[in-house]
Amino acid sequence: MRIGIIGGGSIGLLISYYLSFKHEVTVYTRTSNQKKKLLKEGVFLERSNNKDNISVNAKLYTEWSSGTEDLTVFCVKQYQLTEVIQNMNIGAGDHLLFLQNGMGHLKLLESLNIPNIYVGVIEHGAYRINNNTVSHTGIGIARIANFKGVENSFIRSFTLPLKDSFPFVVEENYMEMLLKKLVVNAVINPLTAILKTPNGKLIENPYYKQLFDSLFNEVNDILQLEAKNTYYQNLVDICKQTANNRSSMLKDIEENRKTEVDAILGYLIEVAAKKEIDAPIVNTYYHSIKGMEFEGEGK
Image (cartoon, rainbow, N blue to C red; front, side, top):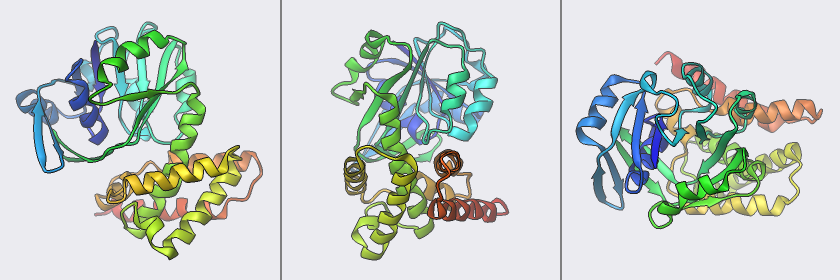
């Protein structure tokens, strides 16, 4: 299968590496420098003190055209998504997979007049070292679900060849899948960014754990989760599985980049307002992260 990967960040490089063993992959980048480096050297992946390499094709975003690939995977940040899509001439026959954090992008996906849209979440830990090197810092789960369309046969044709190298779990309910990831992102990301600590410390440090529990409880109140204990246990499990990882939001803050806090906590603030629910903790962390972004803009 021909796969187009839109975005050469940590997740884009990670899945490009693993998918290239079974599919024909083209990475679409924002800069010509990254394109040239990928064409010349391929993607390098570091994992457990090993470093491996695989060749990929590479083009600029502007070189993408409808129908070129069997599946196009969007790995850009949520706040970049609207601009990227506006600059692409997407056709009705395209199959699109979106791997963004949060749920703020669902309105955009609803507005697309495309029958075959899938959403997914990547629970692996990854860190981009340079334009063509990614460190696979934590083994997790990749999940995918139908957002529009019911072509399960297409999903199987994409995921089945990857069952041994980079398996995907096909979920029946996209909303439940995204809610689980939203809860994880809403608790782990802002806390680790503000406390400047790896994921595992949130449950190992008893004082951080109180902040962890308080934030989760307010997120639960906003979303009115039907299985609170299940979501909480999943959150704790993720912290344990990625104990040494530094969250994407923490890395964004450290490198003075814009975060995805609007798609995560900003989304929760909107939901809380519609339900007329007070959300003082979520608002506090949201404005703390936005303030840290503001301070980083001048550096």
